[in-house]
Length: 302
Image 1 (cartoon, rainbow, N blue to C red):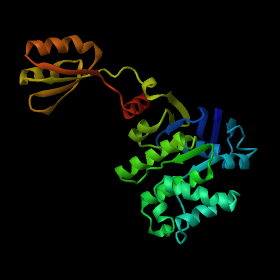
Image 2: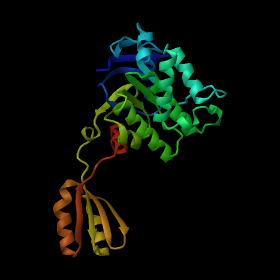
Image 3: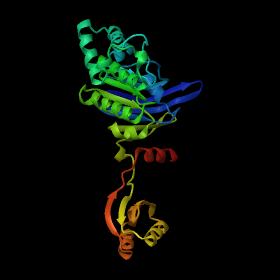
Image 4: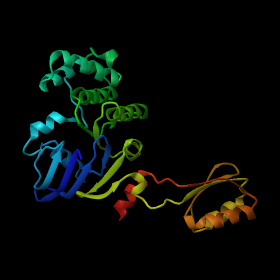
């Protein structure tokens, strides 16, 4: 495991920000850390980076204790905060050169790393433009280049797509996969954008009031989600019968004469009977894939 935490607790002014957190992240995994504001995500990140000490518990990052060996951890971990900060008057290249100097990377090697990182995030053509001229999305990509140039074993990304349009967010998610697939990094992604986490993460952990309330692959976190059926040549009478059935969870009409029905598993035989009796054609019947948002809300209701 590249990250191992057991029984982490952290108290601020009498309030437990973390209350017995266990966390394990495997090498070359994209792990999504989810939770509302105040759930403990930021505190967890600060502890992993060695920027705050836990009140109790044990933690290892890349084999090191962040409390006793903070510099060793910082050499092996790249961090992209939610609000990425750069020197506005300097170019993208100059900002990254400053980072390589801080990390003791030799001049020749640093230049090669910077150019490679800027090319990977699509900023090579604007490498010498002042960051002050960059859009928010370009700054986020430069933040990922900041992580790439360090070549860490673990990348911790805090809300990397915050405030970016859908196209830019998709590019950032592709770059996150790049960190794992081509650079061989492990990625810890902290976010509240559930559909994006579902798209890119191998596993997710849901935090609530400092505790891990659910963890695993999306398919492992939920009970069967029922089925989705699509019916053609559907009459108004059939729609009324379906809307009155307890097992029919949702009935929609995407186009005239066609119905999409979300149903519980026990409703399958009845659906087929209804369709036959009303002369409708069954075009599709498939398991319903639960969304991460549904899983997230279900755990918080519980």
